[in-house]
Length: 196
Image 1 (cartoon, one colour):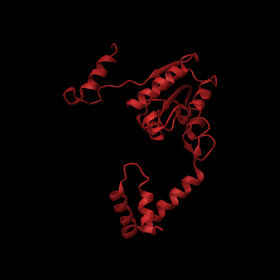
Image 2: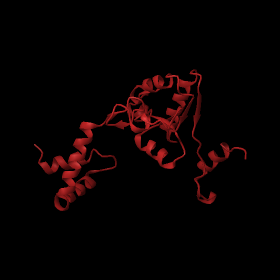
Image 3: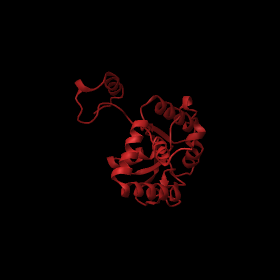
Image 4: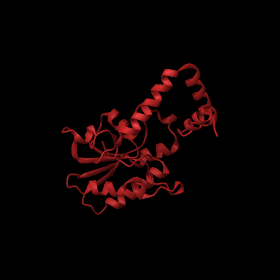
């Protein structure tokens, strides 16, 4: 039987990027220096698990049946941006460049990890696209092998739906200097160039 300290360390290891040493440091810090923080963390985790669920429209996390963005009258329901994770949605909102609605996949197609189309809620996405409101789907998955495969699969899936399907562009970052950009990014920027 594990001691409470061993259970705490093992529990912290479930976080992404946290190995045994990091988990151990976190556990000792909370126990030695921040009892209040540890209790607050435990309460916040409990509260979140009990109260949060998936939005019926966008699949992100919310306490209500529909999240704040899906309930908003100020969003354009004809635009639907598909992202991999809720944090991607937050980045899109932070950029203040998009005023449509979202669909959060909660992952990406990754056969090596056993994640296929069924695991990323593509049936719900298809239902959403067929609601009669959506005119364009913007695929904003990451530019990883899995993200590209996911975007390609969704593009094929939505090809016969009579809507526009687009993909966010990639290339040189704003403020970036060409000498510091990797060759793959630079090549993609040249390939995806547009007229002025």
